[in-house]
Length: 116
Image 1 (cartoon, helix red, strand yellow):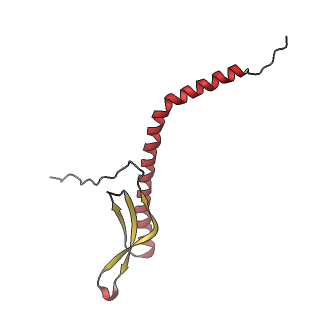
Image 2 (cartoon, one colour):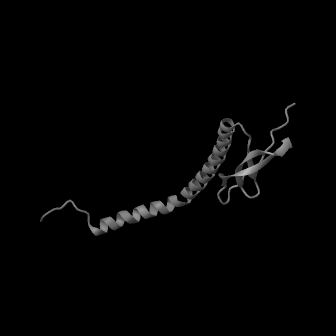
Image 3 (cartoon, one colour):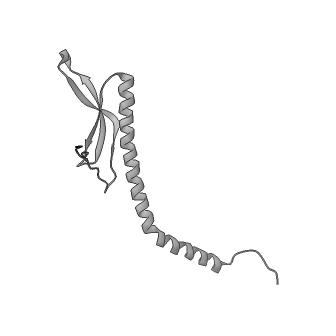
């Protein structure tokens, strides 16, 4: 009898069934991992917006503002435009510099505790 170092179809099916069962058990915990990863990436985008505002403000010698709408989960930058005859500033949104939070995520504004 000639012996080959090959797998039989039954062995392949058994291994695939084992992998499928393992993945089925791991799927619920992976779903939570990806959801938290999306929230982390959204927070990173907001921090990057603040850094962008800081860099642009220094480079252009003008004011930038990080705006937020917590009820909608939106964050965006606006740039200060001086009004005619020195009557103040108007902030206009900067196109393409904004982000939104992923579905199900929310941002909360917390005031620091008053020091005594």
